[in-house]
Length: 314
Image (cartoon, rainbow, N blue to C red; front, side, top):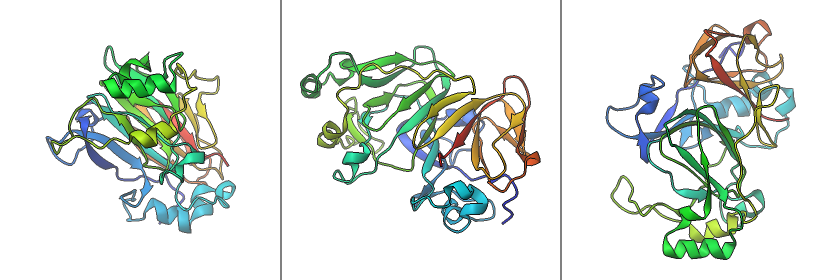
């Protein structure tokens, strides 16, 4: 495989009880069938159950394991992670997701899970769409446990009105739920551990209630996390910069990273061209570390073209 070119992967689509068809209608994606409600596209994934693969048949795991320096750069050469550290998705929520939490790093192992810090960029929001995140001011653990008993969990969780272009950071331990009417890009740690604490008393696609993880959730929730707000975009476009990822919102003609640095681009509106590839909204592409400066020049098709630039902190 030639590493001196933009690397593209084939998405893995997952059906969900809360999913829909907007990856097809809004992003032009070719979904696996004509009727299933697809809730997630795993676009960059080094998971055994959904391994990203290039057109040449090379997996993301092979790139991370066998071509670390050429693709990901010297800065990540000594990373102790056995797999590519991030998982990048698109979520189509046509119904409310369960109210849930991901375990913090200091509790995940004891709970037999993996920590999962993530961020959401809202690519499309229907009027009135909302996000649940953190607790309402003053809510105690006792209040939360009482709400579980009487089915009023949604009343104790903080609600944020959501709009296209908003971004929210979800550190492990923050109770949260995506509301109906949102198409979201999710950048997260490479983890698939989610503890559902409340699922609106609905059933799954198989007609049975979905499993809840109440005890694990209660051990994971940060009960001092009150009323978080959407992220502000920094002058350099930074949306979120944490120990696990650095995500910036970009537009206009510019260079994506320096030679020797690996970055992933995710087109969120319009179209862009980079390294001889055209990316439309919904497309992801990995720019390997060995890519030269000329091939890193990003050219937007119009003023409406925007994309996320994603890095793994060294």
